[in-house]
Image 1: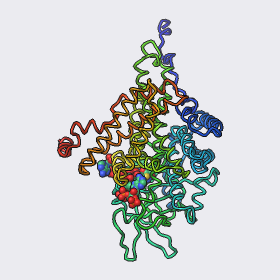
Image 2: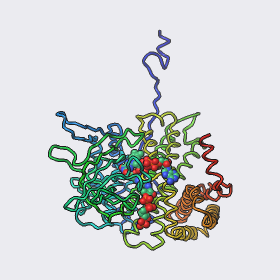
Image 3: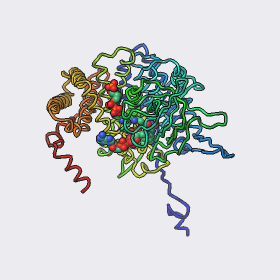
Image 4: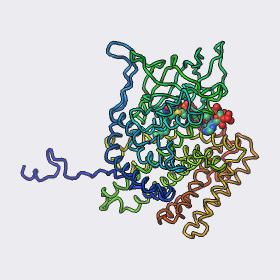
Length: 585
Ligand code: UCC
Ligand code: FAD
């Protein structure tokens, strides 16, 4: 008995070693690239104010908001169909932390700062920097904020007047008691990508010029919103509607309740049971006479909601870059605390190589999404050149589709860097991966956005590509005398020439050829441009040796996969039947 009491694992003892957890420190102070980028670009007169605001914000995110985010995850929303007396109420109960996120977001101006113009052309960069710091701790509150921002943008582009002037004020206010969020109800059961054929919802004209909507919206996220933008087909006097995209119009509707507490014109069918994004309600909605106002001309619904898509796709990309940044931040902290094979993980070169590769991906993503924010800011200030406008149109689907995929890969690798603990729910880590997975699905899947790239190239008669080639070359020009960057510059230069060759060859082929190449083309556009941005940033006078190293590492990959695959015959007319045969073998 005496001998046994010395045994370290005897009876109730569970050993004396407990691994220290990774610690989340101020995400602003922890991010050298973010601070460098802002110091480089923000106007000098505002720089200090912006940096102190972001620093204080980062402190709150680490010490307070992150805990609320976790509370949102463990207290998911609940749908209460009936009140105790049997009346249908369809009440969506959300956690106190979710409600706190709404107040916090308003007070911090997470939407408003995009409209206040305090940083002129850099206002979007400033706003998105804040969202980038906030996103992984936000309990997915960035989702309603994205749609809110998108709705404000649509209203602004259409004109801030009745019936949406009040809504615009509320969407862009910093007063939490007035702040509204918006939904974006586009998806129906027949099609989320093919909205034009999939939308069955009809809009029945009313005598006062308004409409009542009848239909079924299959995915509606953050359904506790105060208003929504949605698509429907206007019925003529005979009840007929126009099929396809030409029949779709854009509508504004408020989500309100009658005196009995029942939703006006809406029934919440059920909440979705989702892989991730569990913090926020995503519902199926029956629209049964929802009062609405038409915002677009009849038949201009898709074109009018496109402004919302631009904004939400940029938000999506910010969330993707932020998820990568967060997992790298935690993983590198953990590597200073965890020992294996006699030394800390940080002292194992192979582990550091793994984290460094994640860091390179994160940097490429960050610079691309910030560049798109820069272009958006220029457009909104009336400063955009034609080149800027073309670039913004081309790079929006590119950044969304590429960063969505990167986020899943980097976050997955990141989880592995915690070993088994990365798979354990109450560490909070698995949620990062679940939430990353949606980034490539909603707001346009990878393939659908790749086809959007083709469409915008065709519709601009190639002008968007011209802008892309011109601007990428100008980014490289600054590096011509920097010898340490020569291999990277050479790689981007030659990939750019390859891409130009591909475009020339592709122009002579039929559309089905381009369709097969669409995804690889979009990836090539992303990788080359990210390479050029990394090189450009490394040439800045405040850049560090790590900025140069990141550029060199990025440019070691195949920057132009579309040309590599073309050379291998991957888009030849013989491949589709072979692909199909292989899949169904
Ligand atoms: O998923 C959703 C919400 C999730 C929550 C939000 C989270 C945000 C991030 C948070 C981070 C945590 S809402 C559902 C999103 N749904 C989609 O993204 C739909 C995906 N499908 C497409 O994008 C398709 O390409 C469609 C629906 C746009 C295709 O429709 P059409 O009617 O066939 O399109 P067309 O014919 O190509 O274009 C019709 C018009 C044209 O204008 P005009 O007539 O003037 O030539 C196009 O130029 O719309 C214009 N247009 C665009 N304009 C179409 N797409 C765009 C665009 N991307 N930008 C500018
Ligand atoms: P489908 O269009 O059926 O696509 C299935 C597959 O086919 C995809 O891989 C796609 O890439 C591929 N595909 C489709 N067309 C082509 C093509 N032409 N060429 C090659 N490949 C193709 N929607 C809203 O409107 N509002 C919301 O708030 C909202 N919230 C969401 C929340 C969550 C958590 C999720 C998962 C989805 C949400 N959605 C929302 C819906 C989302 O936008 C759609 O699911 C998405 O756009 C895809 O549409 P789909 O589901 O109909 O897929």
